[in-house]
Length: 445
Image 1: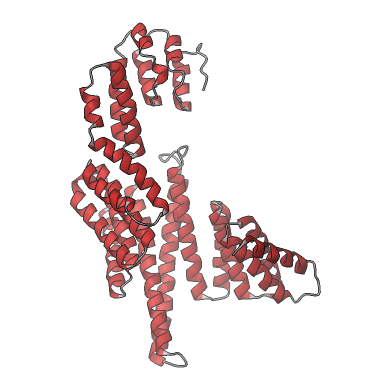
Image 2 (image 1 turned 30 degrees about the vertical axis):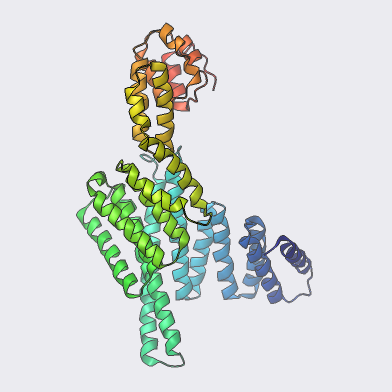
């Protein structure tokens, strides 16, 4: 919807909001229309405003469908803004209202909304560099909430499926075609619920509960999902399933032993994404496979998958990232690491170390990057201050870990060393470390 049309709707909504004579149901319909229009183009604050107006009108008239609709999409708007606490609150209101109205279908939807909200919330916490995974209980609580919501969603699907079977036996006032469509829709919901349960159980398993019973239950959910998805030819869900299984394999400590299984599962995901004709999922699966091959140091294999994305005729969002990865992979294949190992001149070696570190960092091979920078700092730590000064360290980029290593190795007053490394980004932890060793040093960052 274009901006001109949205502005026209906004003016109409404001006009009727102040017109007391207007039919409340008409008001709700217009509020819904403008809220949905704003939501569709990412104007979430405006959408929230009019969904809230619609909710107040619907509650005053006890219009149950409208109440449920508003609670659900208020939750979706706050979710899109990454305001997960508020999104959770509205989805819980959606759930409690659906339960109060004895609406099983909407109750199942509410549980699914909550499952998704918790799952994305968890991923944001895991990506947060300031988050302390070892001591913070919030991720564990959210993972549990996601698992509980997914299991409750599955229970509601069981209830809906039971009612559908009764309706199919009676065949009263319902067309066979409509019953079959409902059956297919419920199968899709069930497969997605299995996947949601499996994802949460996988997270729980990899972060603590490594019992045999937990692994067996996880395997059963995956098996049930695959069997049902194949029966109903749900190719898109089969792609998701195989991606989830490969992600689980990659999360176990000894995943390097399972290259064949991991890549085989990922290739299955690619095949099902093709059958589903879902281009975004297909390209995403190709990229995931390339990323997995990098973990096995199979750079040629990764290049082959990245080239498939690069050569794709349309400019999908993932294509830019794949192109950058391809450049870095090609740099490794043409021997930048070997050139670094063979170089004897320390100044040249440092420049190559910087390029290698950047390359591995871009590809998220942080262990290789850290090993490489640790190696160069081991050599630097053996030099005198005069030798360090001659290398002009400030023209090179190194990690904070490397700077800490130099300070650990040097017992002299490090004022000059700080000056030499003045252009390097230093994190707060490293600053604290330096100040604890050298309280009289002023560090600028």
